[in-house]
Image (cartoon, rainbow, N blue to C red):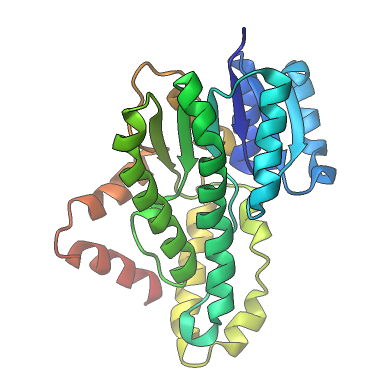
Length: 279
């Protein structure tokens, strides 16, 4: 019987690419998204890849614990077991705390951290039963704090700490845990942040020069971004490897960037690097 994986945030970007790739690898793939009316791109990609029969689209809002539980229970009823969960759903947030609100931070944490907590909690007993895989897409922003990404990086740092703490405990019951850390990815995720850059710059006051420098640098980095398919490839490797690593970066640049932090005991190397992003 084919193994079953549930992937969150599958309407676009890495989630869509991972869904198609998992189905191509022979997995029964449950592709979830908050708004199933946005599934056309996935339907088209799955059909073009010849795997539409292995892709099953379901509505799931990760911030709603009851909906999360209902979706996973429905998947178990329909497919018998859950062999892997890929936590991919997320949302960006750009700004600095003096000019934002605590509510902005809470909303970012709700999607990017508590959404992962909700899905992981609901899936764990099923993953334990199948001795399955728990894979979470974080970000290099979960390793290196980045200017004007305070809330987003805080959420991704939290996810990394959560998963790093869970990994040895999960291993005692047969569940492997992996975090996948992309760098810049050319996907709808960037557009979904919904920034009005001229308005942000006009309202930035004393932070305007730093924000302009950050925007200029970030625009250039996304000009050399990975494709969603390239970023999704390590997810499929983690699904199928005999012993997947705990932490995986999706590109040489991401490995170098994350490595700067992981070897930086006093923080000076990271700050020397990120200070150049705002000057």
